[in-house]
Image (cartoon, rainbow, N blue to C red):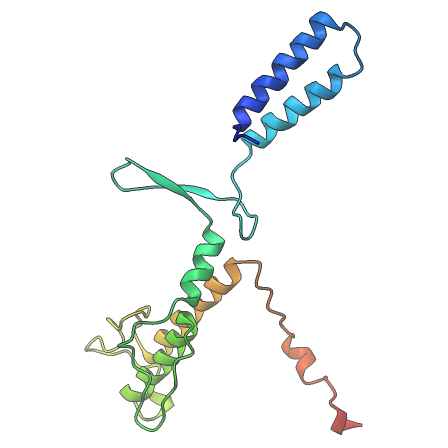
Amino acid sequence: MSNVSITDLIAQARQLSKYVSEHIPGSRYKPMIDRLANALEAANDSPEVCPDCHREMEYVGTPDGASGYMHCWDCYYEAKASAPLHEGARFDAYYYGFEPTGVGTIDAILSAIAIAGKSAHHTENWDEESEYGYYTGHLGLVDGDSAVDLIQKNADRAAKAFNSCRRLPIPVTPQSQVSETKTEGDL
């Protein structure tokens, strides 16, 4: 089978419809051919969809406008969320440390907590703003004004990244139901 564009198929369907109208008046196939041509035109007018998640893709042009490509933002955010954090990221505080998970946005939260622990030994000081910009300029992290702000902004970015791709449903149990849930030992 040869590669035929959808535009060619539309043209062929319209030509066939015209031929049937002229040469086979009253044909019962004419309405079906017209519906086929209309469906092809509607499909051609609809936006391209991502082959992975089947969501609408968007054209992204290069800065010079010379070229571009179709891009699915859901898959883009999923890829960004799962990309590893920069290898120079901090995972050690004074009294504790973390091992990277390999998932960039989760590692960014762990790194933010490690940075907070390195900057102030006691969590009661984590809401104080840094006069020296200690919570800015860390590779792979969103900047913050305080330790709490740094952790929150990186958690917000992770939530946005994971929620943007609806292929990753994350079940959430409302807090009100957590305390009411009975375990086997409660019987």
